[in-house]
Length: 272
Image (tube, rainbow, N blue to C red; front, side, top):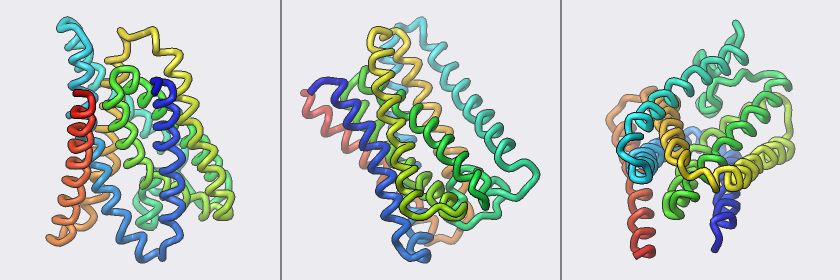
């Protein structure tokens, strides 16, 4: 199977299936949603960090000469700081001086929408546009991983899907709160998820002959995963500190770690 076909398939899986899974999640009773969502967040943390530290970063260093190691390390640092600044700008743009998710006044589900303002229809437009840009970047990162190694591309796609599901749940909640019907909310989210495929295809043709820069895209993807896990997802788990919840969080984080490592092991055996 060609690399381009793999990029198309797995960008579609990472985008569309995460939206459909989030749509199914919202059909559950609200009480059930509030119980299930933190487990999904914990799983995503484990998957993201494992792909970053056990997949993307080692592969980037392996693909580069020793002289570029410092540059790759700097890319990780710049990426994390850059995502912090970008998120700050988005929060300032959407919150202004009013209450929003960034100020901690949302429902447990809406808190996973990463700081977008809600309560009126224009907020839905911001969600759709912002999500489309985010999905496009995810597609570029998935394509960069596949151009380096098929196994790395697969686990990267899985990590993208893992963190997209909680985010899509938050986006759905805001669209519904902004007056969109469930049908339209699902339709707009599926359309925005197609940006993942577009980003992947464009990156395949744009990066295919630029192997020298692929390690930098891999480290940028790693910094994105690290930032999402550490800055956006982990703080939400500290809202409950009882022993039972903490053990559940650790268990699902380890499940995310274990699944990624298992997939890597299986992929290596097939390659051998």
